[in-house]
Length: 506
View: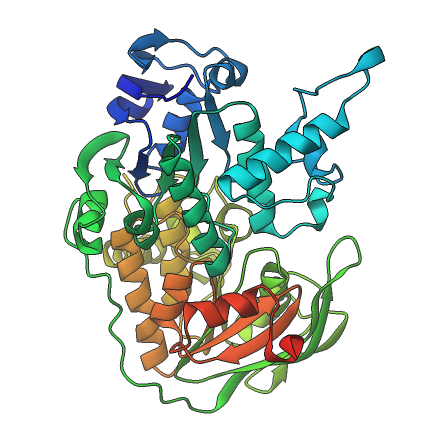
């Protein structure tokens, strides 16, 4: 197969009464980078799983070069020339690059022995042809994330893929790795390969796409071009106009509130994932922690919030030591916490929206007294917060688990920001929210900062970091490689995210 033209006609996929994809039409031409743009939960990944044979469609058809096809398995899709690079890589960490690339398609020689030489030669050929420099003999777990992604792309190309599906491919990359990926995508398209690029990041979409299809709530709601502004694309994603610029006044920090000194935290394996970290967050400022996920940010936040033990060092809120304190003691010291995993650490899914909105203040006098709960006050509080934070629910008495992921996140944000606290810690706070909700949450963070609160933001979204931060601390492999100004370039922060500092360059 030399080139591929892909056409989806009326693709519909249901899960029970929920329609994830509703009669979706899409055409990808040979040599085209076609972006499927939509918020988390819009149905993008479901559609790609249908295309790749992981789900069966309930309606519609798939055509390859004008011929209807049916993919019962992902193997069927691969044999037809479709490859997929998943958001979470499907690699065996202890295998070499060559072993991963040929897994399931191993070349053999006499006596059915695996022909490693042929496999390595094939990888080198594709590496040179498409600018994907990778050492076939390297062990995957020793490679940076950006190189691991190249291995995934090589795996698809080695199986003679003519159309590549890239599902949120930049989620775990540094800015330099993203720039490299964009060059690779453009090179593949120039060679005649078709690419379906799945994303919700407007800057990247505009940088790489030839055509854009926007889906919202499982339906195609419009098309766009890379020349369209971010505001135009965002309005199609959300269904209304959105202000993507965060308005904030000058940085006027006050006294220190949160102080972390020489902190060491180990994970379940005993590895020091937070290694001798020190920083301070002052009143009236947002300190953002940037970095590729998996470099100790989660464990840092858990330690500050009382969810993980501290081996050594100290954590203080307003001068009160809270290292190895309980979560309740941290809250009572003046901490508000928006956790990274909302369902595990932020909510009780079986309880109502109203009850979840008072989880951190169940014994407060306004909600309880003389051994009983003040149900009317709990409901009144919920009604107010649901309105203020635009939480979409049929009733405040509905289980919070029945809400969408984005609305579950809004419940946590509403609960934490409704208390009078001194420091707010927010880990990946806008994950799963639509552009409009992100706009609102960002405004709340700036309001807290302007009300003389200290805000510690941990985010893997650089756009969010630049928009909100007064200072940026960059983490790499459990250490802080630098604390810099938000006026720093993406390139300089990208180097710090990769562990490259001035000292390491000397």
